[in-house]
Image 1 (cartoon, rainbow, N blue to C red):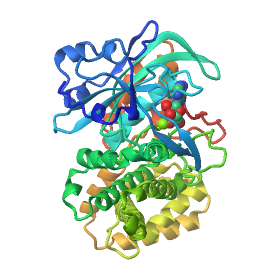
Image 2: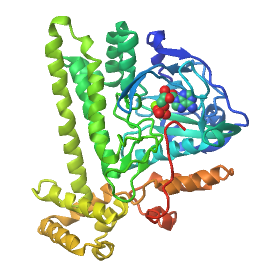
Image 3: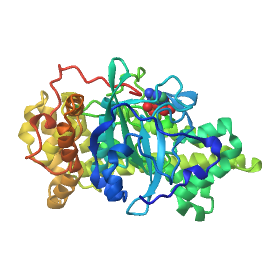
Image 4: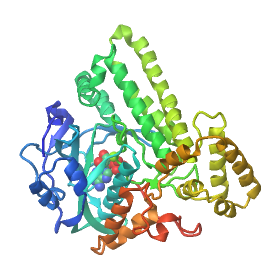
Length: 480
Ligand code: AMP
Ligand code: MG
């Protein structure tokens, strides 16, 4: 590994050094060798992956640490939070010379564990492992994971489950909530911390006339792009608190996430979200809220006499959110539909399609694949309101008339995944893994490596369809 240890150069009040506490009977779960290669792990690092991914082996080049941060959880100020069960164990350069954090989740108690036990269970580790992999392969900026290990140590949740650890990789573990913690508890650190964030994550902003405003705009735009892509692939993060969004706009900390199956805009996969704050359709506005909350923490960076102007400038930065989101969402949606982006009726037509999926409770991913395959009869046969479908199809075919449909169809194939990680797919892999059988984790890992390519030899019929509507949903909640 090529170390680029930079977080420990920050003020020591921002973290706590400590070693991971391994679980009893740690053993191999799954390893992402392609990612380890991308992260320039040597052959000996790769041979030691179980020791590394279970906290038994750490590196002399980096003393592991827990970060402190704060956050707004479900809209409420939650005060100090921090890495309560994960440690940053390395910062390394990948093949593209980008610095990547390695964060070991489930590594034991830290000063920020609050009421928790510092552990993660195999179920949630497998869910995060497969979803990070799936999102990366779908082209959505996200954390990933080099591997995970399981153990023989029981961990109490609603029932006793198997303790496990996940070695997560991300381009950034600095959360919006870092700024909230600093502002609340150590405001004198804010200027230097912000400067480091810009140097490390947005060095191009250093040359701007107003680097802080340029930085804020970049964070806002990248977050907007990320959320637009979530909407397009039907991903619901589940817990978009300010401590779970980072400043690089890559998906992080998605415990109770879900990939939407039947199209329900008000769908929520997180059963701890009692007020339905983070439904699929609310994600853009919740992202906007989080960023607005974050921007308030930048105000102290202005000189007193410039504060009012600076507030207005920050508000203007936030206006980029909606514009960037809509630009990417609308473009992506027309590509998914095989409609020309410039055509004035394309967006309306896409909305009409989504309306059908909603009213007929059709599968989001599968219906776009049917549209792509021009399986119009099959789509129509699943509709109760066939008149609505016929009206849509007429409009759709009219727009596509006299267009370069070959080009549009090629775009469609790149925009519509054949496979997403449905809850029941993850659940089956988890149940087998709990009996020490990782074959289904491996199959899903391979299948989701190339989600846009049909893989007849690997797929199973259940990968393509939602469970019948009368089967109860898999329950997922926060912080398991
Ligand atoms: P999450 O909702 O998973 O993002 O977690 C919110 C906060 O609770 C973070 O500060 C986590 O580090 C902490 N946390 C979650 N689960 C545990 C646990 N089992 N032990 C200690 N801290 C935890
Ligand atoms: Mg979190």
